[in-house]
Length: 309
Image 1 (cartoon, helix red, strand yellow):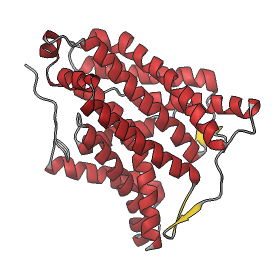
Image 2: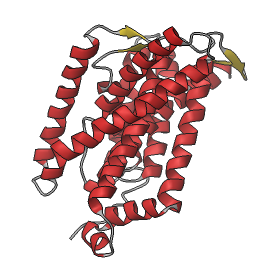
Image 3: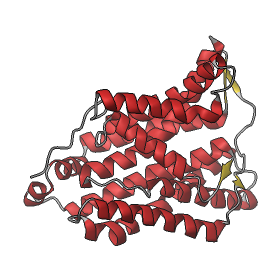
Image 4: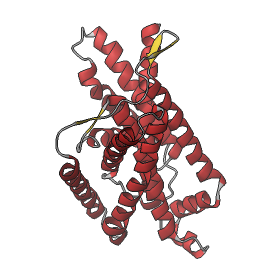
């Protein structure tokens, strides 16, 4: 039972990070029908920016509590990622809204390579240790061990997802975003500024990616210029698993993907004598993804984006 609880805890931590990034994918797709494959690299920019800010904070005010330092680093990474993502939308995607779908896809891959190259120039090609400012002693939770960093990660992820749901469902901005996703031309006739909505969507997605990036680096104690590729692909898979274009599906897909990886690496690894252990955890997630999409191509929670005339 203790092993099961530990795997669940690990899966929830991993899934929460996937869910935060998957929300950025699914929001952009819901509004623009565009897959922003540079989104994982926005996470990388957030992680490296947070690392730089955290080192500076440690040098200036070393006596401050670790949680305050980490939150300040996260708060500083958010505007940087928002600027990066908004510039990407303005320079790379806006002129391609009516282009064939292959054009923005290739552009997204090019932007991803550009961001990685710039990050390599600024921060170097070697992995950088992320300062450990939170207490290192793990806590016991029903027989499982969980670090204070992971507790903070889960709390911030839940709060961020709840805030996004409230924004989408209860505010004028959220109604404008839903209207643009449903029919951008009709929304424009009703007075909705689609350009503003799209920029806001990219900004919100970037903020979530920045938070996820700092938490990812804090959890794994490392950051580097290519770190966004695997989380980006996994988060995109989570969005597809839950139903691309559906924010609830992105959350569900992220959590499920994290649990599948954790359970697969733990239990199937034991059953195979370690042959299929943690080094092969990607296999389990993608096998389940293929099975789900074979049986339900629209994902677990379907597709809420209507066909556009």
